[in-house]
Length: 234
Image (cartoon, rainbow, N blue to C red; front, top):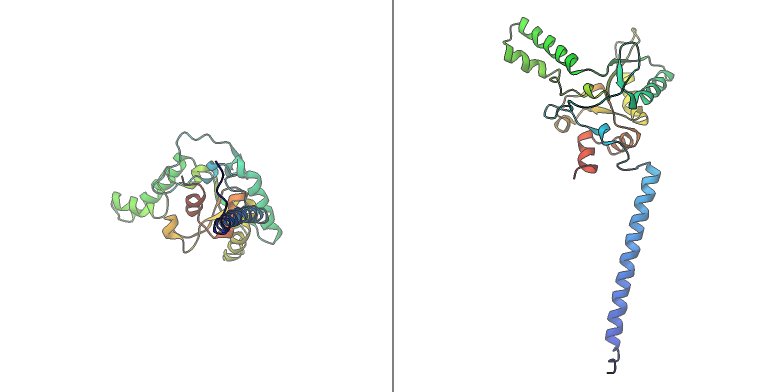
């Protein structure tokens, strides 16, 4: 059986299909190359960080009770998760080099320590005349309930300028906000993002998420909640 001869219209239609296929493949290749190139120049290496560094602990989500931690002292009083100790020391050293006297005012807290802090504050409100329920509500506005503080992860630190002559913390806070990401830390509760974090603005509170995630969060101006939702939600 002889094959029907192709008509000019058929050949034209075939050429059109091949052209569209080649154009689609070319566009796809350009897109892939662009993404890879952008990732390299930005230093983005999505999902490279341990997801445990990105754990969210808030009023609704408690820190895992069975979480295994390896802690390291960063001064005579404070400990942090060993995974962030070196980067924290590097951050403090860099901050000191530009003229500040950075000190850690809060770091890892156990559940019992968090409970003690909360109870002390609640008791102080009761001494001022509040009933037990009201006192606990007032305390929750300033101190998370035991199990619901990032400090229990060992990945959060509160930082301040320890120079006794400097009452204004604006200088060190501005420097940290601009440079902490270089060492894997993010400003955890930024101003204007309260509806996303569920937490008031805390210019002294920094959270370790790892260098790659910190870079992306800083450059995209995201909260940890937004970052996890965009890159790690299923």
